[in-house]
Length: 220
Image (cartoon, rainbow, N blue to C red):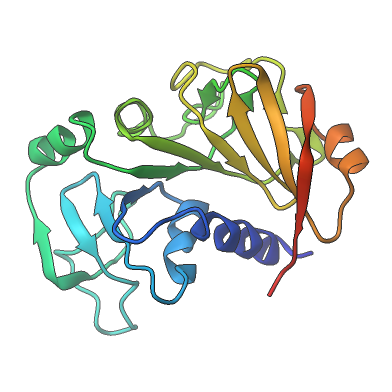
């Protein structure tokens, strides 16, 4: 699969985790693609940490507004019933527990639900942004990530990079699997149609418990 197909698969599967009426924050990068695949009949309200609620889709070329950008600086739109507000109000919303789901990418995630997603030692990258607030304030945290980085596992026994949050991850979704974080460790709940349980285990450093009713999801 091409990397664009991999990201599309992940985004489509994450979208199935969202319920009608959810207030959802999408992190920059891969997570923003989730908005393109919300199931028919499901209405989700997207929140942006830089101060928007009820964001719309990406504007058509030539219709962009310099006044409407998401937290990653990408052009966005605001639905007719949407609202814009200052950053302090946005983070009051986040820290107050009013965000139902946040979807974030990651550099590493581990078997204890710890997350490291904001720094690569020795390289110049943006800071953690609002990730630390989001993962502790949101009711559910979904990590959307490729299963490996150039063949090296991203789901580890223990994160080695500086942590964004400790024990806050609920679900990990990759192009190969859906993994639930529990008090007893990671549980493999689903695998994609073109992999096997054995392959997922091989590409995961952390220990996995295979669900008794493991499912296979198929690309539509």
